[in-house]
Image (cartoon, rainbow, N blue to C red; front, top):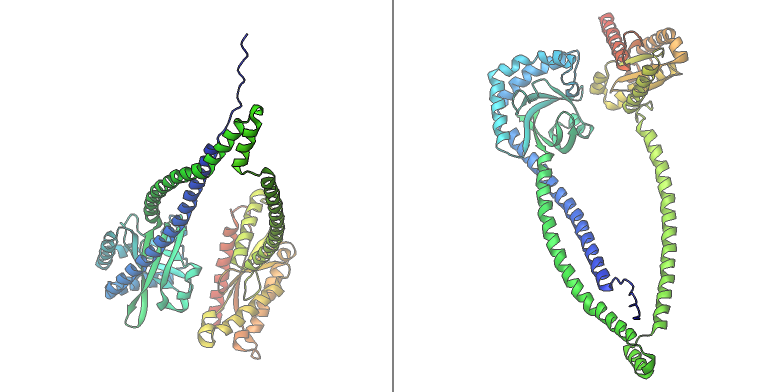
Length: 494
């Protein structure tokens, strides 16, 4: 009977393992290189498109027909200034927006608008990367950008009189009009992902408006994707070549010597011990020394790991401290730096929570007090912004002292809102009447400096569960009452 052949255990050659390691390492290198060069490419493209937007807007501002621009501004500005509401493009399509925009409709029929639109459309069509070219001016009082003419078709363009809220990043233009609008990136539902730049339009030494250029970031991304594909193919070919060379080198410096060791071990024979012993001596392998090196290496590895753990512990402590600092910064972010009351961000958050509350409980009771400082612009113009700040601080202190149990918010340059609940809500009539008396006494006190003799209009409205669908409905009524009070105060002064 024949003896069954002994099955050899499965072997995974070290050469194959090494080749896999080299391949994986090569792919990691490709991935890292792709990320690095993608970032570099993105930054380069961004800089290029920033420059293109700036240069083109500068060209438009220098070549635009000033009389035509001034005509359009002369038609639009009075309507904007005299409008009781200023719905921005965020409210596009709403009833209020449609009513507001209707008063500008005739402008698009003028020959001046047609000439300006043709000029801007030609500029836009001559530059494939450009999404839109338009001219506008800045309403510094309301911090708005007012469109005069846009390059797209009538169905897609922003019509004359259309308003965009001025981004905070561009607030410097309010005090330094010649600064213009350095390139910046926006991503909105209305206009998409854009690079925008604006250059002042000069009439002599006066800045009368701005020429804007929008470049679609989608085009930038498309070109960047093409560059990444070409880069990937180039890197892949390079890494494949390096992998082949690496495998060949590994074969000669590692695999071949290991095969020699394997052959020597397999040829061991007790029948010829002297020859076997000689073969092992010729290998020059000292196993004991290698194990000692490995043990020392493991000790070093453990020491390195221990140091890394300590490092990670310290990093974790720093992270916790950073998180606490972030919480502090978050609190500061909801505070108005000048007056110390809550800011517009905090007010929006409070409104959001209050809207949730009234959706759940229609019996919620609250009121909104709207207070507006009178003549802030006049104080700023005649006595400087420091004096205007004194007026704002004094008004904020008076509001806080009057509505002691309510949170006060500064929602605009000279506008404050207090949300009344509980005790202040129950006593709202008396508190408001006392506030009116105090503000009147202060405004007539000749012993105070002009900035301290503040005057303010106040409006109040309570939430009406039958007619108010949101906090904003209550706010609008309070705002309307405030303006009625302001009008009444102006009438009484005459």
